Length: 181
Figure 1 (cartoon, rainbow, N blue to C red):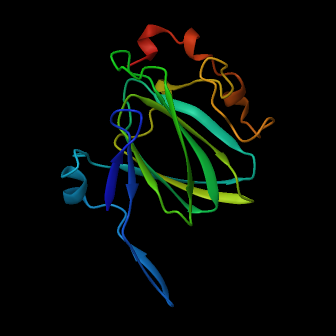
Figure 2: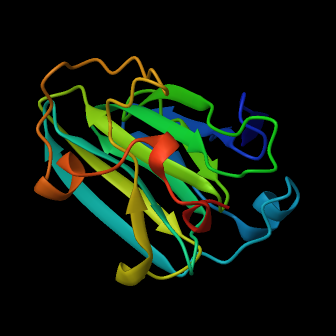
């Protein structure tokens, strides 16, 4: 596996080594020993799988009280993936990182605690997997409105399919200090 630091300190792009032949492919997606050797010494306690149709936008979500680190990847289709630094002490506070994750490029991202995350589906459908370092904690669920002009995320869609919850999220500048890291 190849681990590459992104423009957000702590967020790593992971390119797995893929063994491919006429029968298909094999790749290792997680090895605690290998990850720890690259500074990711965490335990993933919950794995989630979502399936969404084209133009679905999920996010930008994060969790306080019991923050989660995440290892994310797409196993079917393609998404435009977005990460926002929510750590007040970070030089990248309020900055974003975007990347396309797809079944064909097989790129994974590791996001430590302190980041908001979201994605928009680029293909007809996408299956998205994310392993989390803590359990889902509904009381700590927080988010940022997808089209916050201060973040200026270059989303590939103007009228995404959103949940009612995601339509009502606040702008980054309106997030209370207790809901930041």
